[in-house]
Length: 186
Image (cartoon, rainbow, N blue to C red; front, top):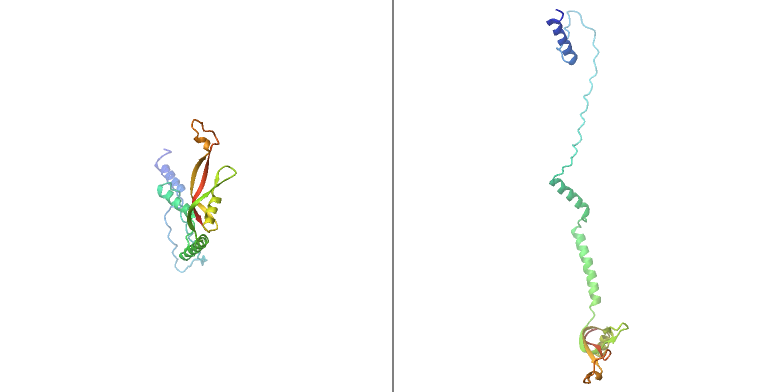
């Protein structure tokens, strides 16, 4: 009986000790004997406990949800929008723009008057009517310096040949004449 219960038990205990060498029964401290003292023990300096290293804040993981996408949108919009101005800066900007608008109005506020009459427009080199000269003539006839045309009238002028009975109308028998009838004078 080579393989009885005793060698099996010994193998089981040995394997348990091999697996968990740190596990065991606590040993009692040696009791001082009467009259005899053990040699002086050297005291081991107390070592400070290892300092606890604070764990880094957990990294924020990307969450592909709707809330995360809205948050990204707000972060992007901060860089796209201009910074807000203080109320005093806004008032200063408004005052500056009002001053420039007032300056431009003062240059435009020359006294003007509307006159009526009839002055012929000249024909420009391209054949179109040039009514600026007609408006100037109309304003000068009323005692003003210059003018801009406000209303123009067009009339067809024909030669008397057109009125002969039985005669066909030919190109060049009639022409259009333009007249300035109202002008804004300064």
